[in-house]
Each structure stands twice: as structure tokens, then as C-alpha cells.
Image 1 (cartoon, rainbow, N blue to C red):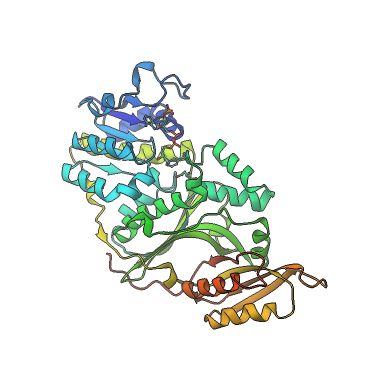
Image 2 (cartoon, rainbow, N blue to C red):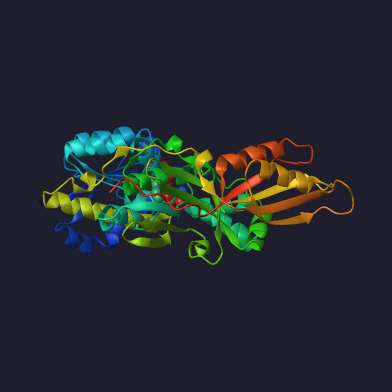
Length: 441
Ligand code: NAP
Ligand code: HSE
């Protein structure tokens, strides 16, 4: 075989980084694979667009058939994003015997099991290191390095845009909308940034992580998903008083008979490693039954970090193809149906903020509503209010571990009261009862 030829579906932020790395490191990549790796055709929407690095006009096409029907291409690299038409193109490429590399977590979350089954049936490789954690080798770690262990839980900062926005708000006092614009300009945000700030991108990544960590085949709608849009600057100040930082976390826990999969703003103690992972950095804490704790951290978004992961996958699948040993990456992912437990059944401590009319007896009523729902208060501060009856005050507290559904019921009751000025706010605090022994091994 002379060279491994790849076709690119998309050449934007990530695709541009892939082209650059394949060019800049062509010699070392050829040495690792055994033959050179060449870019064949590149599908884009607008062939006239200026691209850095430049590609010869003859390589660019707007007709997907030029990639999918080109029998000289061995590997298709999908970096176009979205579910349709990416799903159709990837399936067609698999059916024609090409190996696949993708960074598309949305595609994997919505159609991963179908695509994996198709690739397994055809005996080709499907690799997706770039889909979670940008340049952090978390997929490889779960798939290969921890193959002999079983994972009890993982929690991670997996959306660079959210972490960047929260960091810029907390450290630099930036307004939320300005911080989101910055993340877009830096190439971190999805084409639709509401996927990032609404928590959906993190939920897609958690579905992918759950496939590898728990062997779980789950519908992405089962992930309890909250974004960062409602966090106010004052929340950062309040949680700091209690010794925490706010992070947007994706959390997966194996409870044995079910798994917890949830994405939401989370309070983490300020002196922990994950609380100090800032900006676009991601971090994923993995708890292996045999290994114990393990923390992976690095740049979680952007052209070059993500391209590092995509090109590592290209090297793997190209090497397998060159040596005639395709399909092992696909076979390593074994999926089974797993039940996702209701968020109401999750147990953890909470941060609660009530904006109320400062009147005698209000605090007692809040405490009673929480107590009636079995929710025990740990710490409490009041900010604002004053001598004028009915001035606005924030009552902010943390609770002991409580059932999520109990907290929800208490907050609904308080939210409907005549002393509440707005809906109560809550954020969960990292931790809870130990995850029970899982089934997957
Ligand atoms: P992007 O900058 O918007 O690039 C998308 C590319 O795909 C562009 O070249 C675009 O063509 C092409 N494209 C999109 N739809 C197409 C269609 N229907 N037909 C033909 N070409 C089409 O996106 P990106 O940031 O590189 O992200 C690509 C993928 O990587 C996504 O799945 C994303 O979630 C994932 N990802 C991104 C990052 C990141 O930091 N950006 C990190 C990890 C994973 P034109 O150039 O002509 O518009
Ligand atoms: N939009 C994603 C993020 C890109 O901000 O993390 C990396 O997957």
C-alpha cells in the first residue's frame, strides 16, 4: 500500500487544525503509521471561503459523493457537526468500507449505538477522541488504559465555553453575554452557542462517556440537563462565602441497578483541584474500582487541542488499516441498555438562594417548608433587607444531603408563597452517598 488517503467532511475550526497537523507533522505521522497519510478530498459548504491553512481548490468539493464514492479514500474524518446530514454521510462511508474518525459528540449521543453497530458489522474502525474533552485523551483512557477496571463514577468540566464564561464572570467581572461572545470568537463555542450554555453539549459528552465508562446505551433525553444561563454574579460571591466555586459539571455514577447521569452547575470546595480548573480547560475525574481516583485535565476546546485528538485517531485507524487489523477500536465499545435514575432520587447537599420581602417570620417559614420536606439546613446568611418592612433580602443557605425531589417540593412551596419575590434558586453541591457497586466490568 502506498499511502493512507483521508477524506474530510468539513474544514472549519477543527478541520483546519487537522490539516495543519497532518502537514506540519507529516514525517512523524508517516513513521508511526508505516506509510504517509494524505488528504484527498474535502467537503465544505463554501469553496470560495478563505481558509487557513490553505487547501488546493482541486481538493475542495461541495458534493459529498466526491468523498463518499471515492474508492481511493481509506478514512473519512467527520468534522462538520450536527446530526443530519452527518449521520447519513458517516453511515454511507462505513457501508463502503471506510474507517471513521469523528469529533461530533452530538452525532454520537443521538446515533452512537446505531453507528457503532454498523461499523462493527462492517469490520471498520470508529474513533472519536475529539468528541469529549478537546485535547484530553479521556476516550482512550477509558477504552484502553482502564480496560481491566470498572468505573464507579466520573465527574467533569467537559464544556470549555461554560468554564470560560464562568471563569471570566468570576475572575474579571465580565457580563455573561460578553463572555459568551469571547468564547465564540476564540472558536470554543458550537455553531449554536445555546448548545454550550444550555448544558446540551455537556449532556451529549456525558452520553459518550457513559458508553465507555458504564457500557451504557442511553437516550440523551434521559440526562438531567441544566445550563449556566441563570447564574448571577452574586451567586459567585455567595458560594465563595461558603468556601465553594461554581463549576458546570457532567456527573455519571453507577448505582448498580441504575446510573445517574446529570449535567448542572455544581458547587465544588475551593481547595480542590477541579475548582481551580479555569478558562477553556476541562478536567474529568474518574473513579475506578481498582484504580481509585484519577484526574485528567487539559484544553477542552479550540482548533489545535481538538485536532491533536482527531489526528491521534487518524494515526490509530490508519495504522490498523495499513496492517490489515481493522475494527478493534469499534469492538472495544460494548453497549447494553441501562436505566437512568430519576433526578428526584439523587441525593446530595444543596445551595439555595431565596429573594424575599424582609418581614418578621419569613426565615421561620422557609425553615419550616424545608423541614417539612425532610431538608436540613447546614449554614445560612442573609444579605440585604433592613429596617424598612418588606425590603428585598437574599437568604442564602447550604443544606445537608437531601433527596433532590424533596428539595424540589420545598422550593415549589416557597416559590408560591407571598414572601417570595422570585423563584428560589438552587445549585447542587458535589458529593453524596458513595456510588454503589456497578454491574459493568
Ligand atoms: P465549524 O468551524 O463550524 O466547521 C464546520 C465545517 O463543516 C465547515 O468547514 C463547513 O463548511 C462544513 N460544513 C458544515 N455543514 C456542512 C454541510 N451540510 N455540507 C458541507 N459542509 C458542511 O465547526 P467546528 O468548530 O470545526 O466543529 C466541527 C465538529 O467538531 C462539531 O461536531 C463540533 O461539535 C466538534 N468539536 C468542536 C470543537 C471546537 O472547539 N470547535 C471541539 C471539539 C469538537 P464551510 O467552511 O464552507 O462553512
Ligand atoms: N463547544 C465545545 C466546548 C467544544 O465549548 O467545550 C468542545 O467540544
